[in-house]
Image (tube, rainbow, N blue to C red; front, side, top):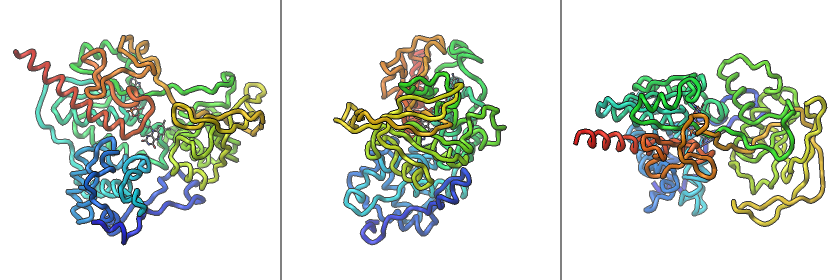
Length: 470
Ligand SMILES: Cc1cc2nc3c(=O)[nH]c(=O)nc-3n(C[C@H](O)[C@H](O)[C@H](O)COP(=O)(O)OP(=O)(O)OC[C@H]3O[C@@H](n4cnc5c(N)ncnc54)[C@H](O)[C@@H]3O)c2cc1C
């Protein structure tokens, strides 16, 4: 260990932009054994592990790095997977620069962070290859039944811990595939779908019952679940697209980001392309509005669909973008243009089709409540050609209570109100986790919530059993 002053930080190679835009494959390669041992040995094993503190899952990173450095790889995997059910997913999609790696003491000391994400990916892929990922061992048996609504990372993670405690677990998913935004939001070039499908098979083989094409509130009522199950977990995510301030309702070639990404992911999974011509970027001048990771996924998808030109319009500057710097760099390398300090003002259209977008050039004023500087109008207006406009302005919760015919207490943001220790809602039998309680967040937080809510449901069901017996 402590080799950070001799060994430079290394990441696996990334495919060349000209090559990688030809398909949707993941762009990063993987460490080999020698490099992973060498890179892990850079860890300083510091007394206060900031990497672990800043990991939502509190992963015991220094310990598994030490095991890798000593080539004790199966033990390393056991430590890593003891807190995280999907480490290979986190290794690929976590914003490590803001979490573990960004807070690494070696990084703070100026030697460059330990490349934790790529080591996590290497280790877990090796575990699959070597057969160390075993079906979940069931610790005890129970006649109690738990219904989970939504099969995203929160629902999937919770199902794994509940099955371990012997419960009968049914996961209801309105889509035709399991995985939530890991399947239909995040593009293949960041997270190959086979990685998610492998985990779905693992959960199924361990005893979780997935029911796809079953929307609660439509195909089955929430009240059916209340009757048939001892506890219910709501893990439905947030999907209502935030709207632009300008009139777009009649414009056919202006879409919310997820409509575009879902179609692209479906086609990538082998589904027949939709007959809706507005869902493809091919041969078009595409303008994506927004500066977060969803916007970066859209621009990079449009490039791969062979758009003529792809421009990202963002109202602040590069330094104030909410998205990960790594993703902005990837997009720039792939040929995406960025119009910083651009605030959309009007769509120029004919017969319900946009031909260009007007935007006001902004300058930055004081910081707002989010800590980022506010865009101010300079009075200058410009136009950009756009035959496909994609809005990537973030997501809000839908009206859950009216869909479920329930009266769960909500927050002022319309997320489901829970106390963040037990994830229990105002109905004691109903729990909630993931984006539906946090608002649009991260996969790693959804996995965290799934783990914690499963403990809480277990405690709830056990204490009910004790109450009944006494
Ligand atoms: C385009 C995009 C890219 C992203 N990229 C990243 C990234 O790189 N890294 C990262 O950490 N995070 C990323 N995120 C965020 C991350 O995907 C989410 O925070 C995470 O998936 C939330 O997990 P969840 O389980 O709460 O919800 P979801 O993943 O949204 O899953 C909810 C599931 O519930 C289902 N459902 C909803 N209502 C019902 C109902 N009534 N009945 C049955 N099923 C229902 C939905 O169909 C869905 O499958 C991205 C998000 C988007 C949109």
